[in-house]
Image 1 (cartoon, rainbow, N blue to C red):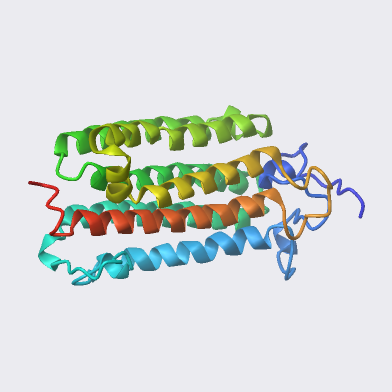
Image 2: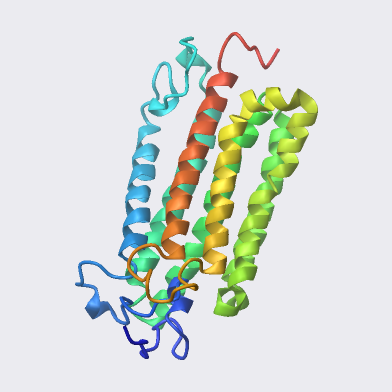
Length: 294
């Protein structure tokens, strides 16, 4: 398969990798008129996050009908104990909503970027910024329920940490949408910003371990699921940053198996793990037998 010489609409004199983050040789769509192809280099990228966004949208809608025993249908209870619906407050709804909205925006912006980026340079640039913003918002939204349940009933700590992570998120948002970080040369720096924002969660987790011990935090945070989520995010970011495996065999992974597709799948896996973690944290916090607020 021969090298494609047509420029990406995102960067008139750059390789198509600048727009989609993958070393494509064939299967790339240089213009919107080619989008009628059934399978191309970005089909998997579109559909993985499109349907993930739909799931998160349904979860947002489910917030209107909380269950008597579980938060919005989450299977978090393993010990068959009951939870009175009166113990669920607007704060529970709010922190879950932040995660659901973050996931919906992140995956939705990503799907839109991959769908419309071949339209023109302007459209690609606009949706590219939204794509980066969505990643930051998902990270921030993921922190909200974890911090809330990790320091359940310690309002000052909750407010302090949520304020701090929101400020960091604002800084990260500004950073990743600046022209330097949106260029192909800023790819690894942009990835490091995302990883650093995620790793900032080590501080509240360490604080929690200091206060409650490792096993206590494991119960309060669903820690093992939370760590699994973090590992999935980091591996996804590393695949994306290193353009592995397509850099080893350019052209072979154009349709299936590129780093960006692996990145997308690992984001879905990580978000699912985080969902389980905060579900278990919710269950532990509202179990009457634990009396965390006494």
